[in-house]
Length: 437
Image 1 (tube, rainbow, N blue to C red):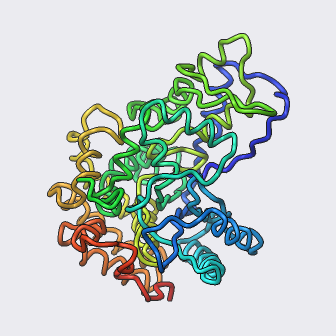
Image 2: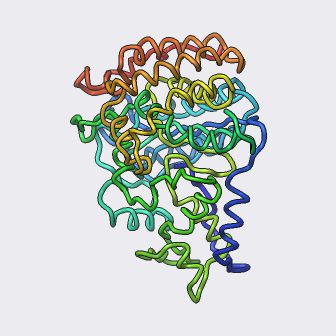
Image 3: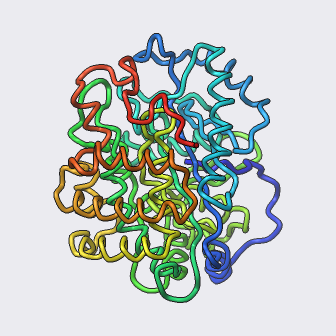
């Protein structure tokens, strides 16, 4: 949920009409050209390794975060509503550049946390603690009210979840495996395979939930206008512009006091009102939309659970980069997941039958396991062409052998132990290894 934008509420310079909104969204959210840049956003839970089932007291957390804020990092460091930490990389020109810069930042962050007796945990949903909000700011006050109208899932997402979000370029204007239309379609169907392969949140409040990715189940249970994908029919720009206009307004910012949280007001209706929004309101509105694939000039893939191990995040980053940015692997991925589109049906992600099966069953679902095996094989062939190090290639191969080939996902390890997944360590293929070399 890397949506850190200024809460500045300066007077609006000008209002925007419905037609202007559509033009702005079309022009800004899909910037095309050859895929050149890659990014990753890593969310982590923070815990005390000695008492992993207990929440970290706010004063301890704040003291550690204060020390982190002065670190000279290349990534943006932000704090999420429940006290999760997020590192958002700068756009990188290659896979290994991205891995190298983020790894160095994580080393620095972990060193500071270690001094404070704290550590990072890569798991998609806190398996033990109730969701408790750490940040009390107007944005998150409004968000909790707005999301809470649909049920308790919004609060759990805000305060207890963590993910690996991979950012890829939107692609070329023309057709083909690296074209915008193909990549947009692929992201929404390959996304289900990524959910299943990397599912890692099977527990809540100390008990199994019946879902390999409980985090993904939360997203699917929230307000559909805020978390659903737009229609995949037709031009992606037009579909996203309609989606932005028809999505509910989460809040109307104010210079002081609580922000207004309207109910049942779409952005389209706001533009037609007597007090229409400005462009800065449009920019802010788009940060309050959480579909599984969000266009922000690039494509932000938001469906992958946080992974176990210090370096577990590198595997979904490497696999996703290969399947999107290598033409041969992208073509294989497209052909592999194309039959899954029929199973997805007409409902949008993440609540259609395909995505539901991925979140509930992971790769125990035979069709998803077969698709994942083909996609991981294509990624493995592509990684040398992308300049991946031997360590990264070995990590992907080990993940494939341990999980994909066996119809398993990281969540199954937590379920097998039936104990404390944090207290017993991360027990992961990458733990203790340097896969950067």
